[in-house]
Length: 494
Image (cartoon, rainbow, N blue to C red):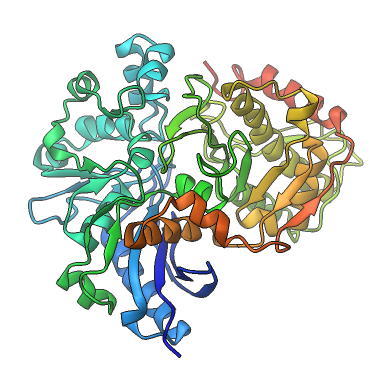
C-alpha cells in the first residue's frame, strides 16, 4: 500500500517545538515529535538562543518521522507557526547576534510608552497597526535594543520574528506573512505593508525585514539541500510562509473566511489568549488588531499570567493544581510577571480578602478566578471589536472554544464555565497550532484554502461540548472591583 501524502506542521512555542505529521488527505495525526527549548532571564528579562529553536525543530522532525514509521519521501510540505513578537537580529551569515528577546520580556515597557506618545497616542497606533505598543510588541523590543545594546542593533544585517527565522532556515528565503508581521508594530493592517513612517520612527531600515507573502499558506520556496540534510527530509518539498502561533491555532480551529467568523476561542497556556477571525478590521486600543493567516483579521487579547502563574501559586501552597475550592471572600490577582492586558507591566501578584477561615484550597481557587476573570474581560472587548454586543443573547450563546494546556484541566474548565456563563467547546485535537501549520503546508503543497482544509479535516464527534451554567456574577464583580480599584495605587496602572 502506498504511503499517504504527509505534511508537517511545526509549533515552535516559548517552551518547546512540536512537529505534527498529518495525512494531507484526511487530517489524521500520524505522529508528533517534540523537543524542548531553553528560556533564560530574570527581573523581567526573557531570552532564548534562536539556534536552540532550529536544533529543536530538527530533533522534533526526526522524532516524529521515527514515530510515524513513514518514509521521508512521503512528506510533501512543511510550515512553521512560531511564538509571536520575539526579536531576532542576525549577522550577514544569518547567525544570531545575540539571544532573542521573547514576547514575555517586559523590560521594554518604558520604550513602549515612549513610542505610543511619539506617534500621538493609542488611537494613532491602532489606526495604523491595529495595536498599541506594549512591552510584548516587537517594535518596543527593537527600541529597547537600540538603547541598551546599540552594538547589536547597529550590526544587524537582518531583523526577524521567531517563525521568520526558522522559515528562512528551511527555504533560504526571507519571508513572513501578514499575520505574524502584524504583531511587529511596524506593519500596517490598514495598508497591508510595512509602514514607512513607523520604520522611520524606529530607525529601522526596511531592507532588514523579510518580504511579506500574501498569506501564511503561500509557497515561498522549497526545502534547501542543507535544511533537507539537517531534517532528514527530501529537498525541494514545499515550504509555506507560515505564521504566528495564534493565527495558526485559528486555522486549526476552522476560524476564518472559509470557516467560522466572529466566534471566540480562548487559549489557556503560559499566557491566556482570546481571539476570533473577523472581516472587521479591529481598531480598539484594548486589543491587538492582528491580521489573520488567511486574509481576514484576528482581533486578539493576551494576558501574561495564566496556567504557569496559577501553578506557581499551587506550588507555594503545597497543593496539587486540582485540589481547589472557590475563593470565597479572597481575591488573588496572579500578575506574577507584570501584566499585558490590562497594560500593567510593573504589576506583581495581589491578594486581598484574607480571613481566619480562608483555606489553602480557596487561595488557589482565587488564583484561578483572578486569571480567568482577567482573560474573560478581554473576551468581551474582543466581541465588541468584532461589532457585536457581548451581552446580546445570541452572542452570549456562541460557544467559547477552549484550547491550550489548561483546557485539559478540570478546574480551569469549571472556572471558565462558571465565570463566563457560556457554552464551551473543547476541541478533540490537542495540537491545534501544529494542525493549523499543517493546513498551511498542505495548501502550499497542493492548493486549497487552509481554513477550508482544516475544517474538512475536523473529525465529527471528537469535540467535547459543555452546556452553559448560571454565571457566577458575585465572584465576577468581586474580582473586577478589586482590579479596578487597585490598578493605580497597587498594580502600577497609568
